[in-house]
Image 1 (cartoon, rainbow, N blue to C red):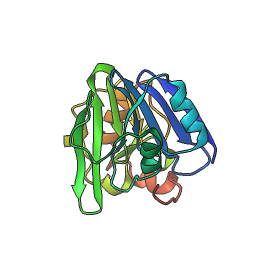
Image 2 (image 1 turned 180 degrees about the horizontal axis):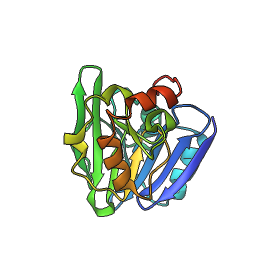
Image 3 (image 1 turned 90 degrees about the vertical axis):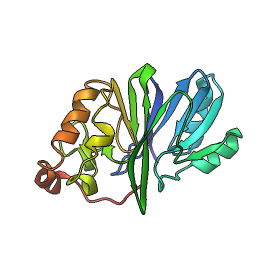
Length: 196
C-alpha cells in the first residue's frame, strides 16, 4: 500500500495511491484536537498524526461500511470511535444517505469552509469521469443536491480521491449539476472497481 499525504487548510489527508478507488482519509485539526475521519491505518499514518502536535480527540466513521482502521486507531489513541454520529464538536453533521445498507454522514466545518463527504462525492477517477469530482455512480440518477447543494466549500475532502483545495465550490456544483448528464461519460471512462 503506497500512501501519499496532502496538507491543506483543515489538516492533512492521506490517499492510497496504488489502488483504483484511491481511499482517502483525513486528520482535521480543531481546538479540541485532531479528528481522524474514515481513517486507513498504517505506521506512517500514525507517525504523521503524531507529528501534528495535538492530541487525537476522536475517530469518526462517516459511512457505515468505511470501518477501515477506525477501531484500531481509536484503540491506539484511547479515544472514542464515533460511528455515524449525529454530532461532532466544531462540525455540522449532515445526513447524506439514510437507507438500508447505505448510511452516510458528511461534515461541514464552517470555520475552515471545509466539506467532508465519504462516498456520495469522490475525486478519484472512478467517480469524477474527467471532472474534478463526481457523484457516486449509484447516486447519479438522484444526486444528493438537497443534502450537499447548500454548501460552498473552499476545501472538499472525499473518502475516495485527492483533496480538492482549489475551486472546491465549483467542483461540488459541477458534480451535483452534471451527475445525470455525465452518466454515459462515466460508463465509458470509469474503470471497474470494488468499494473500499
